[in-house]
Image (cartoon, rainbow, N blue to C red):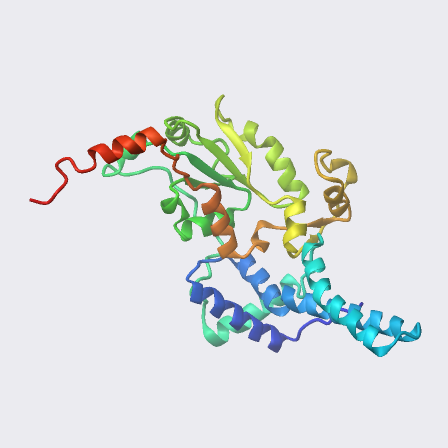
Amino acid sequence: MIRRTPSLLSLVTALDQSVTRLDSIGVRYTRRQLYYEVCRTLRPFSRLVDRWSYSMTGGIAGLMALSGRRPLWNGLVSAAVRVTFPQLVRHLPFTIHPPVSVALFDEALAVYQTRYGEPAGLLSDVPPMSSLTFGERESDLYDYGLAYAIICQDSSIAHMLRANYLHMEIPCAILAAKEATPLPDALVAMLMRTPSPRVLLLHDASLSGMRWVRDAPAQLELPYGLRVRSLGLRPIHALRRHLFALHQPVDPNEIPETLLPIERLWMGTGLYTEIAALPPVSLLRALRAVTRVRPKRASWWSRVRQWRISGYMSWVS
């Protein structure tokens, strides 16, 4: 199959559409996330499924015609394939090759910036370092507790999460791996003030991401009792969500034995997927869902007691 590289003009048009879509949502994003958004604009998954369904339907119709079947039977079989094949494709595990290279995207972005200016939601390529020091007005902030600390393998992703004020919504601490090696003592103290603190590791579906998750507890110098949870991408997540995958040289002996056979096969071919390949809105939504505090259901007797005292001195005089 021959892949056609889009022209620079069509790439700038797709870039304009992607920037308009992201800015209409009101989300901040990194340069790498914008690259994958342009890839989704150029090669949407729905169009890919429709093209595969059309090819499969035409092939089956040709085989049915050669076999001498009646036209009515051929039409029924083609209609059944046209309905069931898209659902089957959506459940198959596979990743997609990016339709454009990073170098060509950088060239198109330079043309876009010259023509339209800097995108409103695009973050700086050099993320600022997070600071856990507060002035005199916030000196009592260390007296409070935090239930979560999100440590990102990619510094730009940590910058993106903080730029979208995720740390104010949850609340939690968001740090890059370089900033959290080791974890600051003030943050450790805030985590230990909560009943069940957790350190969440956000990483890529790659060998470097797997190694970082394995070595992170020792590198962060976490105290005993502080739970660590891997929250990043695994190969099976990239396969199920049909994300864009890149190639890199890989040593098969370094692939973890704990992965599923399909994950080991996928990584053995040199494929990997970055956390930036997830749409920015999907990433924020997933982190909100994972760190959402679910209230405990009240017992029957506590509800009865609440009904008994609900009217006591509660009426407006």
